[in-house]
Length: 158
Image (cartoon, rainbow, N blue to C red; front, top):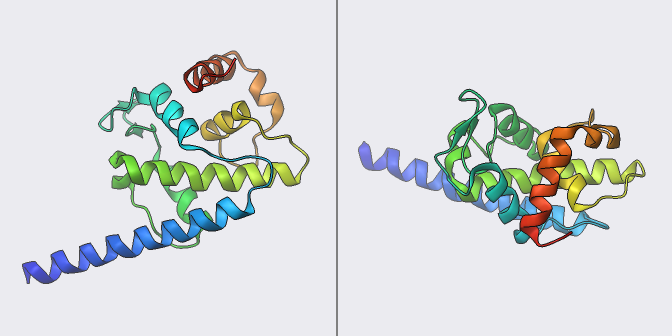
């Protein structure tokens, strides 16, 4: 019985990875003027937690190297239209990177279709508020400007 359970969980994990790879390929071909690069994800990870997969913030609500909330996991699963990720995946560096890639890609494409020019600073801002309520006006808050400047410094941009 124990082997059967292990086999099922391993099989499910492989299925998750295949789905994520498929979605990433679809998202990368659908992107028009922006690209979520590994350099961007590295910088985001460094700014959020110093690349610590066990980091906990926001009174225990933000977990992992990307400091993701449970609602971020639900949003990634909603975009994928299949429960690929679980809240426990927030501490897995690879899974959390894919959650961020899927979610930011989706919302960047959404806002680009509405006439917003997508830049690295906007991608960083979308990580903090990945939904339809985001607007360029939100970038004017002092906190967002500080986080974005820090992220851009880590990416080697101005």
